[in-house]
Image 1 (spheres, rainbow, N blue to C red):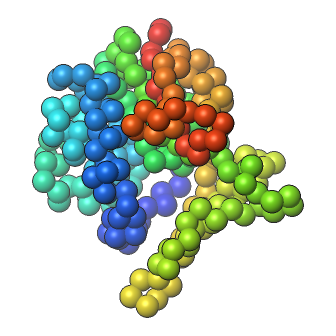
Image 2 (image 1 turned 135 degrees about the vertical axis):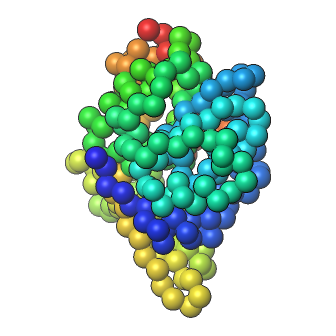
Length: 244
């Protein structure tokens, strides 16, 4: 079972600390992309549903959404929002938890695949998703490209957010293919810190995990608006289709 790094305080302050994630300019393209894949009357499974940032607007588009969430506190935050009664939630580890079958779409956004901190867990996640997709169903992952190219020689830490209210640093261990995200916020004149472990993963490795699970790559973009994926892309949206 992965470690639950989202306690009640984190869940309660999540939207305040990452307000940019809830901007319609960020949310709407993702919902458009996912709704098109799910299709009219489709069913979707969200891994790491969190506070419903994507699930709630996707549900309003007519897609029946069910989520798996490790943190009861995060799920409780979603419960109090309009439309939450139309979204099912199962508390559990999304690498192994199964809630049904014949979903037309499964998706995992905002780097959440890296919350599984071993390769075995990530491979099992693909297998678990494939078991729950119907024939031709799609699996979507949004995740960053590891920033190793931007590390100066001999250094292991890369700043990814630098604002007056929030500093974020990724500390890489290339031998184990893991990283620790360190966050520092100034909240009401006080410093809050948070560090979480992750396993970064390359696009080609994800493609192999998909093949092991009976899925093949359908498309890959650098963003939800289908911007071309290139060697300079800093993230990717990948779509695999169930073939067996």
